Length: 336
Image 1 (cartoon, rainbow, N blue to C red):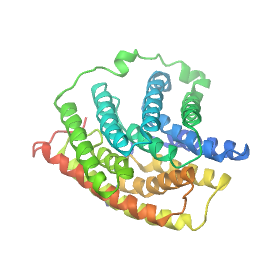
Image 2 (image 1 turned 45 degrees about the vertical axis):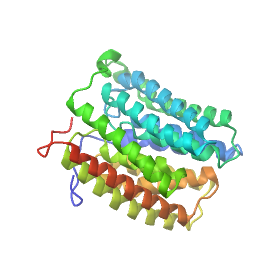
Image 3 (image 1 turned 180 degrees about the vertical axis):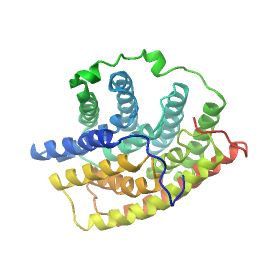
Image 4 (image 1 turned 30 degrees about the vertical axis):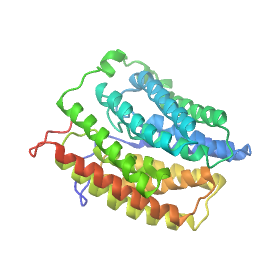
């Protein structure tokens, strides 16, 4: 995974990219037209559902994605419940990271692994204390977003040739729980970076611990190899710095309403096209997307202070995630 080369193509990505773009843009556009844009921003987080099991046949995704959506909703509920207490939020970050990692690695969920469960938990805790949306309405909006993304993912079933594929048993799609040496090492790394990330977050800013931990978990990914840890850490650091600059430029346009929906959809589309081929380039688009979405939900869109904070948080988290790769034997093991 070089900074100066793209990984080989793994097949067409535009179908998944289109689904992800619609999942994030459509709720914002619809709720903006209905006069409730804040609910659209929350529902857009449900688009993370469609990012899982992207290479599996649609008939198999139909069985996997409801479990993913349920996990995201539970993460959001925990975030909303803990939101009023910074200590609870920090403890919850560790719990959500470890539990979601155990389930992801134990049942071979595959990429993007536990990352978005941690991110949804943190965003829910942050947004619920920074916006006027009530906790119950927040959860309902996010659940609706998950359901909408699930419906988009199933749209190819309208084609007879897609329905003709025989679905595999769920036990075959998500075998486990079982933990081989790679899974145990990945889980150990997540546990370590979660605890250390929270401790560092308490020093830097308790409100931002979820971003530090999320950055570390993203670097760990699902590849049990020392070299992969260092490469992903470098990609995340550089990609986030450039992405923060892109956010600063986009913020000057003060995007809102339908224009913001279109912009976020375009960023999500670009992310899914390149994320499996060049991680740093994907981060260039991921960073402004998350900053714009979070800023819109909390009402501080365009804040350059937030961009600088995210750079610091990402550098700390990515360094933790990369350093945890030292736990692997020097020879490493091939990514699963």
